[in-house]
Length: 191
Image (tube, rainbow, N blue to C red; front, side, top):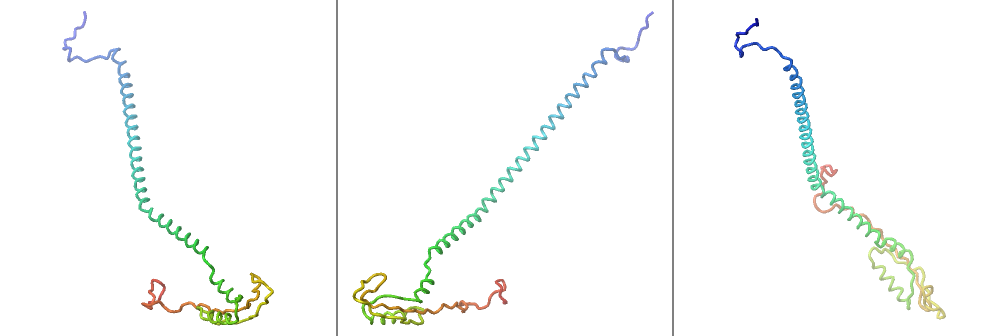
């Protein structure tokens, strides 16, 4: 006789069969693969988001640096202006006439030619009236000879004269400029 199970089918205990045990590892493998893919996607998305954030921050910093450079370009313009002015002053100084040396050399010896002796005296009076002239001395005045020609080396038949002109030195101004005579403490003064 064969045993008969009287328990209804839906309430009976199930016994594992050989075919049901093989599917579980496959399902677990598929789930593990899906989990690896999801983790890989999340990590890749996070890396992309992080790099986008860094790129946006770098772009914002570059914009700020460009704005600051625009504001500070006035300083470089000022430096260019100062350099240009310094060069123009040095160019003017290089082309200036050395009046001090000219006056010093003129003051030591003044040699010339005049047609009359009275012209030498008149020249001495006029030189004495020049600015900062202290004294005019006649070193020599001689009549030329008729047989010589007038040129750079010789006065010929004209009178030859030699004068020394003495100039006064320019003293530095020791007067304070008009206005307040006290110097503020911020500029090194005592008041």
